[in-house]
Amino acid sequence: MAGVTGGQAAFYKWLKTFLKDRGLQFSQSGFKLGNSLANHGINLDTGDWQNIAYSRSKPIRWLFDVDVTTVPATAALPSDLDEAGIGGSNTSQGDKAGLAVRLLPLFKTGDGPFERFDEFEAQAIFMFHGPLPPGSSGDGFSLNVTTGGMKRLQAEQEYIFAGLLGIRPRTDTFQLTVADAPRDITYGEVVDALHGAITISPKGGAAGLIPVYDLSEDADLDRLKADLSHAWDNAGPPPEVAAVVAEEDTDDNGEPLDFSHLEVPENPDLLGIDPAVYRQINAMLQSGKQHLMLYGPPGTGKTSLARWIANSLPGGKWTLITGSSDWSSQDIIGGYQPIGGGDVDFVPGILLRAFDQPLIIDELNRCDIDKVIGPLFTVLSGQQTTLPYRTELSDKDSQPYVILPQPKAGAADHEFAPGPAWRLLATINSIDKASLYQMSYALSRRFGWVYVDAPTDLREFVRSFLAHLDPAAPEPAGEAVCPLADLWRAINAVRVIGPAPIIDAIKAIRVLDPAATFFGPANDAMRLAALDALDMLLLPMLDGIVHQDAMAIADATVAAFGLAEGQARQVKTRLESVAI
Image (cartoon, rainbow, N blue to C red):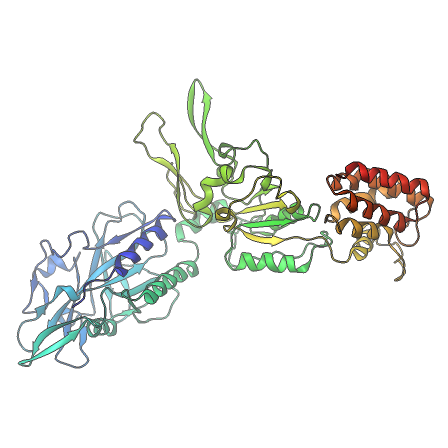
């Protein structure tokens, strides 16, 4: 007969981490003593506890009588009860959100006493909607196997998930004597009998037989983790967290923020943003990607878009900072700093001080990214991280500060827990990526990346922006040339730039030549204004281009604006000055 598989240990290890990242724990009733039943004796004549009054209130096992005189075998609670104790939990710390119990089958083989074969025990897991209210060091739980109702200390207790766990291969067998004949009993038969005897009724779900997960199979282990995670997510914020949200994170009407559906609408004032950008942003948010990276050429509106996203999210509050090479992790996360009077203590950085709202980091790659937000690596992927700073600097054994990836009501002094609205929204200019600090793959995969490109139809962008400035202006003829769009197209063939410098150029030209017309052949006033705008606003964007590309842009400028020889020579000289 094979032994217990490693799936049991793998699941509980996963569950411990799943809950730890939320500042929570679960109880394992009767696990610490191994196979010992301590002071709980079993009466094999009755198939029940020896001392019923003592053992039923806080049982060390969830007892079931399994009748193997029938095929298939059937199971029931001892004494044909509908409700019985399933286990106990230490809830005194107010952080228990789950209960694992051990199911011990007692085998009925005929009219004689029951027989024990403890190696064929199974287990069950129950998950609650957040931490149970603090209780005692030994709260007892019971379940009505007919209705699925649970009680904790005789009061109704809701749960959001339950599963019956097979902890060894279903083909494992042992032999009993049934009706004077040997009979091989498989572990699968026992689990199936228990399955048929237990009805559950989780909060938000329909009553039905408890689902079974065979932890000797990797696929079932993965299914268990997925089903439990799905139940947790579907249950929404735990009640205590929801209370904090309702009190501290409310909209303008004082209503709790609603994160059930995230939708960023298109911004009519952000011209030139491809609709695909909004589709991708919303796909990321609605599929659970919490942190976004907007990247692309300079001037494409990434910062304005990040602000729009933050304003569109529940709460509408946010903080914006701009990356700097002078930053350290102390600026963003925190660290030891003098606090006056010769004392030093841990001082939270800007992120932890605003851990209840989105943080926009503009031009993120201008800082040493991995060094500055490296401590957030694990948090960004949904796991808890411990900081190298103590709550009591003078006490080397004091609790270190930790950052939780999930909201937690009543976080301890050493715990930093984000609010439900927290997320990172960062921007990167793709033109700077090669020359500034690089982002490691380990960090980059924590973000959802959205490329914000320059408009595809440059002429249409100029037309749209001019109409935005002056809705009463006449529409240009469909065949009219747009010299500025032609210049922009030539620049983008060398180095892509977004609308921002073009918008600045349009505004400057309108100041230099109030009568300027942007469609049709340029007149003398428009040529002078355009050359000034080129000098002021576009040449700085072209520093470092190669000489051949500079001459291509110069030729395009001459052709677009119909420049005379002297002006053409001036443009070429200017572009040569920024070329290498």
